[in-house]
Length: 482
Image 1 (spheres, rainbow, N blue to C red):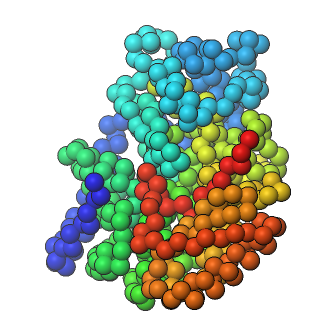
Image 2 (image 1 turned 30 degrees about the vertical axis):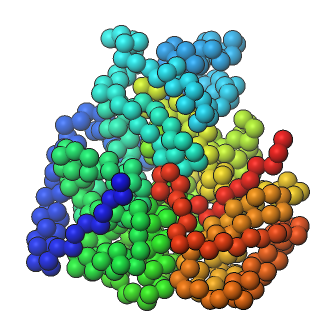
Image 3 (image 1 turned 90 degrees about the vertical axis):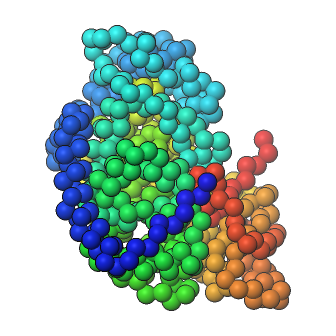
């Protein structure tokens, strides 16, 4: 069920609610977290390690990786069956070598072998030397590239992940507990924050002002702009990137002036350069992106100087791999995560389906090794010569170089080595002749990108269907036959 737009309150009551949120929210959020030893411990650790030397960070991260590898081998039947015999015993210094010798974990593995990856409380005993797994729950990924996958998490993981997220937000200038607009286009997340009285209380304490955007159009955009303009005390927003794309496109197309916010944080998809510039033009003075997932928690945040993705290696261990091996500096590969805080599910080398550029950094400047996340692997196209084409370059071609004022939104799907279909939503229909002229021009431009003559089909849709999680993909790749 699609979440409905929040009702627009009369100005007086909206102002009173804002004053209550401004003062009570941060206090309630802080007091709530004081009850969690795991949250306080993780927050203190994160504050300490982000100020520590690279050597200290590596020491702590390697020790945690060593402990987690031993735990997964001991308690997960899936990993015992696949563990290299020579690494039955290993030292802290050998932990990364052990990890590199393990097979990668795929989303299909999660679906087929979830029971062997799930570490149940009944498998544990008190005093075994590992963190407990209180309050285990099932959690599901958004299913962006197919059927959603199930993992198991617990209260300890949730508290520690929340502490790292809060640190990241504060670093970027968005303070948890302060009133924050929440423009989110995934029905999973919107349902989750409103599901129970406890969830609704937590949402209030976090200061989130939900602006549901699973299906957003001009009328809803205008209603949200009116609400934002009235709530003068709110200067920050957390936004689902594809909902924000639609929101800002409507702002520009309909020439809707909106009160500027101080800062916007995006998540749930790739923040491509054109969208970043549009956000800065239409609604905010600063914009940053965060990177993570429901199944693995927070991975990283954009560096304050926009130089790359800063990760938290004691929380999630990040690898950029190609065919299971680490790529070199400046090379591209798929992001894999070892979830060092999840003792309810043996998450080693999970392939996220994201393509990133590995970037070596001087010690202390950016410890992540990720220069940029280039989008989902499903969005990358394949040229006849085997070259991989980034979706960012296609977005720039169609959305900037060959932009047409009558196109509201698009999606390019490759259907063969030299064939593709462009789906478009229209602000207005320019007529068959204009559409055909555009198709011919774009086919020629794509031919230059693919370095081969391209056949392009143009389809007009009232609404381009989103993925299962509510995300919109600008590109959908094609897998050549084996």
